[in-house]
Amino acid sequence: MAKQEQTNNPHNVCTWKPVSECKNCTIVGRLKCRCGSGDLLHFIGLFLSFLFPALIGIVLSGYSWSLLGWAGLAVIFFGFWEIRILCSHCPFYAEKGRVLHCIANYGCPKFWKYHPEPINNSEKIQLVIGFILICGYPFPFLILGRQFILSLLTAWGLILFFWTSQKYTCSKCVNFSCLLNRVPREVVDEYLKHNPAIRKAWEENGWQIGVVTS
Ligand code: SF4
Ligand code: SF4
Image (tube, rainbow, N blue to C red; front, side, top):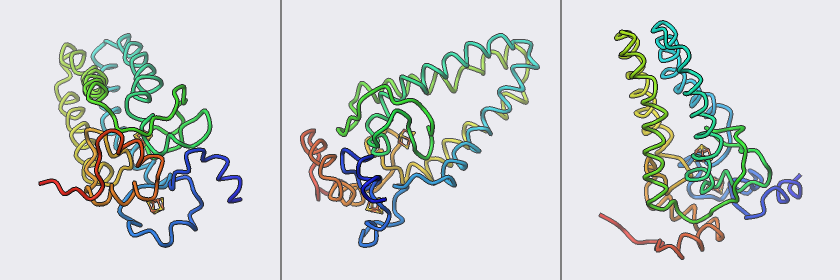
């Protein structure tokens, strides 16, 4: 079993090692560092609180045709673009294989190689642009279609999604260089100490273990 997991783990990332190797870890419970169905369902449920009112509102507004554009944008963003600029830097992406297994974008294809180095500024800007496009897309149609209550519910779903993610997911997510990540620096350091390949890539890009920032 251990041998099989090891062949799936070419970068020797602790997230993909057997759970038995976590028993002496000092940051157990501080990170969502294992792929669990509970975390995935929590993420999907939260996203649906934004998606459902938006879908209903667009259909009622008479702009159903616009859903094709939204679906196309989602395929491009979640299938290729976001996966490259965000997920390809994540330890979950380091697993060997063509499909992503993680606590959010589970099942997305992995067309890109794994990038252990931190996300750069250009990628962070692209992520903001991508989020604005994906999350902002339904609002013009809802407003043009005079679906004001469903616009508010969609906006509330979006606020709920980001607020809850920040509090319960981003504060424990192992993609530490993401713009939204909230993991304390000392926990990042400990994770890097468990993962020499990632640590090397981060130190080559300026990260210093043990440095306290104000
Ligand atoms: S950080 Fe790594 S070693 Fe520690 S609990 Fe998570 S997966 Fe296990
Ligand atoms: S950044 Fe988030 S969505 Fe992407 S692989 Fe990591 S946990 Fe999954």
